[in-house]
Amino acid sequence: MLSQGKLYVVGIGPGCKELLTVKAKNVLEMADYVTGHKRYLDLIKEVVKGQIIESGMGREVERVKIAIELAQNGNQVCLVSGGDPSIYGLAPLVAEMIYRSKIEVDWEIIPGVSALNSASPLFGSAIAGDHAVISLSDILTPWEVIERRLRKALEGDFVIAIYNPSSRKRKPNLEKALKIIKEYRGNCYIGIAKNVCRDGEEIKVVKVDEVLGYADMHTLLIIPANETIVDGNVMITPRGYSKKYDLEVG
Image 1: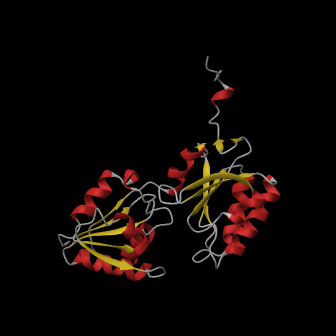
Image 2: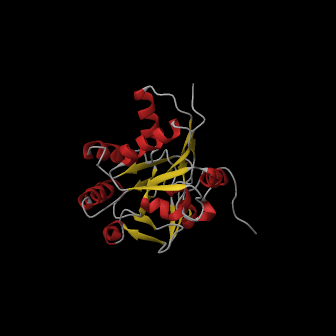
Image 3: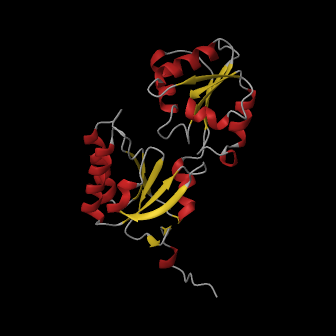
């Protein structure tokens, strides 16, 4: 028999209340417990009415275990994740732990607005149709795998959204990635979206050679496809309508 408790894995979006979904807000307000990384909890504290349990970086497994146990004990629990919990968030970890442990617990994923969804419109429409999403973090994925995926995405001429481009410990990964990008696209333009929807928001388009001075863990990079239109800080990736219709207005 399942307890009356429930675990919600909640995507809080980029961090501003305007892009927090109605469903996410509702479950955060009614939860007995809300747990997550302090950085994300600080963004939604005004919404939370239950008890907050903070946790630090690198303690994801412990955080999930606590959330599951609280739900099994009859509590309504929210485990928060930045952006969307299925995109470099906690949803896959929750699903795998429940599956491998063969436990019974009522749980649900509440989708959120991911970084690429909130950043793309700020350039015009940088991401449209087919695209690839790659993280440069090698904490859980070996660099050899990341490099292979990046090369395949560049060969396929996808627009590429790059998450976790750089940190103090992982700056060499970005340097290697930029070198690979130049192999395929030359010194092309790259969209940089930093702190989207939060204090310090910065949106700009720079050449590959200039990226290192701007990118950090709070940054999303957008690598355009060959057909992407770049004009100043505008990036528009056509869907193909101009090949069938006259798009001139007036």
